[in-house]
Length: 200
Image (cartoon, rainbow, N blue to C red):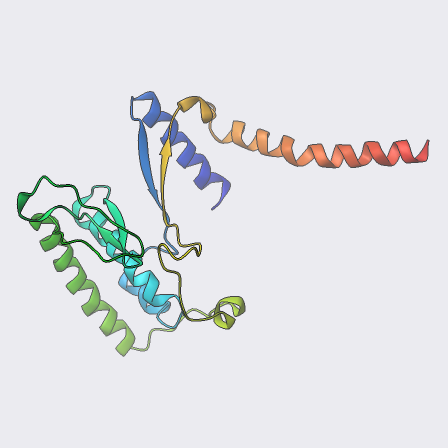
């Protein structure tokens, strides 16, 4: 995440809260979940987990709406609703069995169409021998047990940001950079002061 990117997020958050929005969702993925990128990372030990994350990305790309995220059986479930128009709320347990649910038909059909197209492109790219991205050694040395929601491992890919807007700088990147710079300068100044006192 670069300074320019976090500045853009701050600016969007500020304008959202000024406009009366109480919260918004941020989705963070290891990369843009395109067939090409999936093909490049197909040898990564976390690939199975990333395929599960891609389901959420597909829901957003297909509907252009924030997906409703739930967790059960240590996996993510997206846009789940009570079956048959029931008004009884669904209860999800991250490690427990998934309740009976359904996904709105229009979303399910759009996601299915996108998934079929992506899987076809992915297979073609693999068949062509698309080069893979080198796996960093800490990742390759780690267990292939992959991250799982509700397992206590750092698998959080979704955050809901709440107001108030006063938490975000009004002047965008300049204000954020200046506050960051002041935080990094203070320890240096303190060390210099201690050094001067030590010489006196």
